[in-house]
Image (cartoon, rainbow, N blue to C red):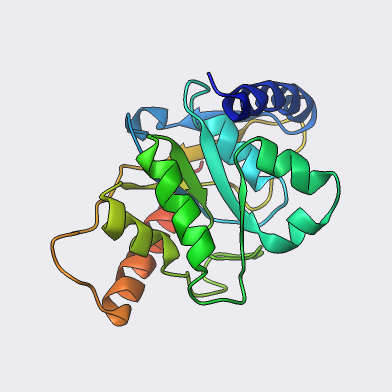
Length: 200
C-alpha cells in the first residue's frame, strides 16, 4: 500500500469517528460504486461534504478529491491534502490542464476520483449550472460517472442519508462538443438531485 493511501485511510477513520458523534450518517446504494476507476460526483453545500463522500466510498478504495486551489495555500493544510492524494483545481480556469492531467493519472491508477460538478458550495438544488469537467474526463478515460446525493442540511444526532445512484457512462467513441458536454453535465446533476428526492 502506498503512503498516500495509508494516510488517507488513517485520516478517514479518525474523521469518521468525530463526525459520527454529532452528525451520523447512513449509506444507501453503496453497491452502485463499481470496481476499478470511477468518478464520484456529488452536490456540494458544506465544507463537510468531502468527508461524507469519502465515508460513502468503501475504505478499500482510495478516493482522490479535486479541491479548489485556494485550500492548498493554507499551511499545513495544503501539505496534508496532497499527502492523501487530493489535488488542486483552478476554478477560474475553464480548462485547468494540470487538474485534468492529475485526474487522468488517478483513474489510470485504478483509483476513485471525487468531483463536485457545481464547482462551489450552494445552499439549494439548481442554484448554479454544473461544470462539464467530470464529463470531459469520463469521455477521455471511459470511467463511469457515479452520482451521489449528500443532504444540504445535515441534522445533529440523527442519521443523515448519503445516497449513491447507478453509474452512467459517456460515449468515448465520438468527439463531443461543448454543448453536448453541458447537456450531459445537466443530466448528471439532475440524477444527483433526484436521488435527494428519495430521502424520507
